[in-house]
Image (tube, rainbow, N blue to C red; front, top):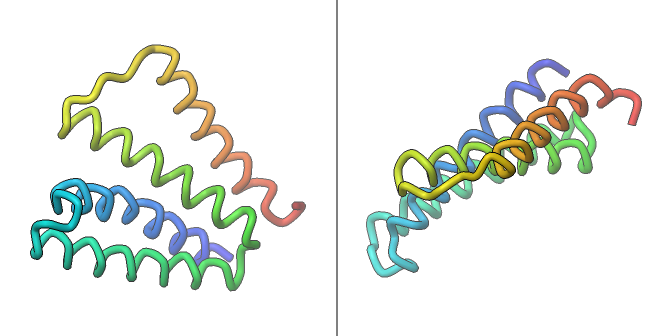
Length: 109
């Protein structure tokens, strides 16, 4: 079970990577960035599918998207200089709390 959580964590952290390359691809007009997006996305989905062998679909997907959302927000704010309000930060903390909670209750869902 721990390996599945490690895999879903890695997969969730890969999501912002392919989102970054997608942004840099300029709607798939830049070939190099587009290829990078497709490769990263393929690996990401494969890792998600591996985690789903052990962790249920609902928990896996919720954790994956939560980690990906947080990572993408960090990239948006730090790299693309997007703004994050205090209220937005509160909701990010709620996502983190949800991921931690799902980790502890995964066997009971």
